[in-house]
Amino acid sequence: MCGIVGYIGYREAYPIVIKGLKRLEYRGYDSAGILLYDGKNLKVSKTKGKVIDLEEKSSNEITTNGTIGMGHTRWATHGIPNDANSHPHLSNSGELSIIHNGIIENYGPLKEELINRGYTFSSDTDSEVLINIIEDVQKKYKLKLGKAVQVALNQVVGAYAICVFDSKKPNEIIVARLGSPLAIGVGEGEFFIASDASPFLEYTSNAIYLEDEEMAIVRLHKPLKIRKIKDDSLVAPYVQELKMNLEQIEKGGFDHFMLKEIYEQANVIKDTYRGRLHADKGMIQMAGIEDNLDKFLYAERIIIIACGTSWHAGLVAEYIIEEYARIPVEVEYASEFRYRNPIITNKDVIIAISQSGETADTLAAIKLAKENGAFVFGVCNVVGSSISRETHAGAYTHAGPEIGVASTKAFTTQITVLTMIALRLAQAKGTMSATDFQKNLQELQLIPEKVQETLALTEVIAKEIAAIYKDVPNCLYLGRGYNFPVALEGALKLKEISYIHAEGYPAAEMKHGPIALIDEKMPVVVIAPKQAHYDKVVSNIQEIKSRSGKIIAIVTKGDTQVKELADHYIEIPETLDAFSPLLTTIPLQLLSYHIAVMRDCNVDQPRNLAKSVTVE
Ligand code: M6R
Image (tube, rainbow, N blue to C red; front, side, top):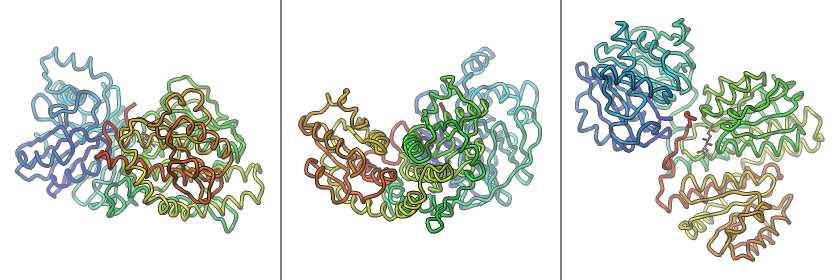
C-alpha cells in the first residue's frame, strides 16, 4: 500500500506532488510527506495525518519553488503513524532520499549491521534502512546512484516501488519496482512517477508501467533507461496511451466517491457488457474466453481466488457457473490458497478476481497456480495492473476508477463479467437450452435499467432506516442461494465504513449459533427476493420475529408476505434468481453509506484500510 508521487521537469513540483498525493490517498492515509529540491537545497516536510494536514504544515516549511519533488502518503507497516515514520526518508549523510511503497522483509538484520558500522536511524521504518543500504553501497564501491540502487536492491527481500533522489546529482530520480505498482508519465522535457497514472493524467497520456524487477533511470533531457535489477540488462521501454480521463476520477457533484460510484453502477454495468453481450444476435463474445474456450471446456474444475469483496463476487460466480455451465467451482481466499500447499494441476482453470489488480495475496496465488501448470484467467478493473499482466488471459470489468475504499461498482461489474462467462460456457457446453440462454441474455440487458430503478426505490428509504439504526453496535445479514454472498458483502460494507460489527450468514445457518444473538436490539437484514428458497427465508424471518429481532427486508416489488413481517422493507425489481445479486446489493451499499455518513465516519477512507492491499 502507500502512494508515491515524483516529478522532475520544468514546472513547479510542489502543487503537482500535493495534488497527486490527494488522488493516491486511497492507497493509505495515516501520514504523508513531501520533498522539494529548489536547485540548491532539499526541503522536507512530513506529518502524521492526511495530505490536507501535510499541505497545511508544508506551506510553512517549504517556502521556495523547485522543479523536482517527491511525495508519499502512507499506510503504516513498520512503525506507528507519526511524523518521524512518514516518508521521505533521508540517508545518514542527508544527501540521498527515498519514498517507498512496500515492505523490506529482511530489514532487521540489515539495520543491525548498519548500526554496528555507525549508522543511526530516526525512524522505525524499513524504508530508512533501505536508503542507508543504498548510501552504504554507493560509498563503499564508489558507484553512481543507479548502480548503487541496483546493488542494494539485490540484497533486500520484500516488495517495493521506490523513488530515490541524490541532492548532489539533482538531474535524475531512480525508480524501481518489485511487487508494488509504479507508473512513469512521459511528457515533453518532464517525467512524472506515481503508484498509478491518476496524478499525471492532466499532463500526459503517455505512460510506462514498470514490470517487476525493473528499475529506471529517469533523467532530465535524456531518454528513459530501463534495466533489469537482477542482471543490469537493458529493457526497451513500452509507452502506453492512457484511456482514463480526469472526469472519471473527480467526485462529479456527489458528497463522496462511494456514493458517486454506487450511482454509476447502471452505466458501468452497461460498459461491462458493451461489445460482449449481443442479445439481438443471441451471442456473448469475450475475446479472452473465445481464445481459450477449450481450456474452460476441458477444465476438471475452476478455482476462483480473490480477497474481500472480490472473493464475494467469486462466491456468486460459483453458484452461477455450477448451475449454468455445470463445471465444478471452488472459491478460495488467495491468502489461504497460497500457503496451504493446494493441489493444482494443468486441468484446473484459475480465475483470479481483483479490482485493483495489485492485491499481493492474489498475485502470489496466481504465481503459484502458474508454477503448477494451471491456466490463469484474470478479472480485473485496473487496466495494465500487475494481475492483468501476470495472468494468461482475462476480461476487464470496465468499471472505471474506483476511488472509494469500499468496493461497490467493482463488485457488480465483476459479477456481470462472471455471469457472461457462465452463460458463454453454458452455451458452449450445451448445458442450457437455447431458449433459456436467450432469456438470460435479454434479462441481462435489462439489468442497468433495473439497477437505476433500484437506486430510485432505495434512495429515501435507506436514509430513513439508517437514521433508526445508526447507533446499533451489531447487525446480522442473512441470505440464501445467490444472495448468501450478498449477505456477506452487505456485512463487510457496513463494518468497513461505519465500524459497526456486522456478520453475514446463509439464512439457514442462523439456527446453528447466531440466533443466540437475537433480541429486540438486534437488526437483521434479510435478503428475501421472491425466488428459490423464498418460503424458507420467510420461515427464517418468522424465527427472528418470534425472538423480537428487528427485520429489515430486501423484497421483490409486489411482495406481500415478507412486507407484513418486516419492520422495514426496501423493494427491488423482479429479475432472474442468478442476476438478483446485481440488484439486492444496491440497497445494502446505500444503507451502509448513509449509516456511515450519519456516524460521521470517513466514508471514502475508512480507518486502517487502503484501497489496494499490496502487502500480505
Ligand atoms: O483490489 P482487490 O479487488 O483485489 O481488493 C480486494 C479487497 O482488498 C477489497 O475488495 C476490500 O475487501 C474492499 N475494501 C471491500 O470493500
